[in-house]
Image (tube, rainbow, N blue to C red; front, side, top):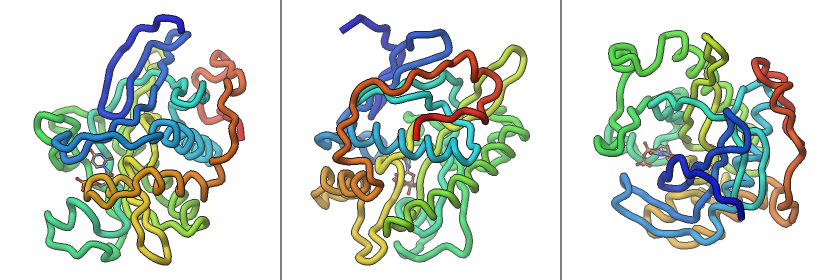
Length: 266
Ligand code: UDP
């Protein structure tokens, strides 16, 4: 294997320098962490499944006009993505009460929220990713007002699309986390969806049984995490297809500055 420069190692992914300027390679690990990395473990095969699920979701989102960093999947654990400057905000979208909002506000898990809620957390592991408001984001210049407008409207569109996509396979989308990045084009920059969308960062409950099909199985020691991730991939129709070779060639030059026309493979 050719030697590549590692840019960053996170909790679930490693980033390497990509083959062309402005690209990076995301490598999906089996490592799992919870509670601000106080709990650590591995979920066998998670990296392979999350790579496929995230490829699928980002591709579907690009088809509805959401600009994303995804270019193509390279192999079982890697995908080629556009390099972005990550906005240091985790965007949490909630449809049903679960997790931290229950402890914070005394809500019962599973209670539908009166309407979809968007929360923002400042990305800082040492501080435990604290919840912040738009005033903090503006005050500390983490993102501009225009960027926050793009981020919140994209988050709502993504939520509407994903709720339908998962409902079609009998899964309720309880909540999920998004990350966005800035892509620079000369003096201009635009906000695009980055990171990954997978059962690591979503709460996914079986519509009929409320069985959890996400990382809560690991967080709460419920067992069966491998099977749960596989089940999500299976219902999305992306397991059993052993296409693990290089994806289609993607001409980056044709897509600079007009990301909305990106058409990754179906
Ligand atoms: N989430 C995430 N990374 C984080 C925090 C949250 O992917 O650092 C996801 C989490 O999987 C869930 C949603 O965002 O789907 C809401 O998480 P919550 O705030 O309830 O935090 P948790 O209960 O996971 O600590």
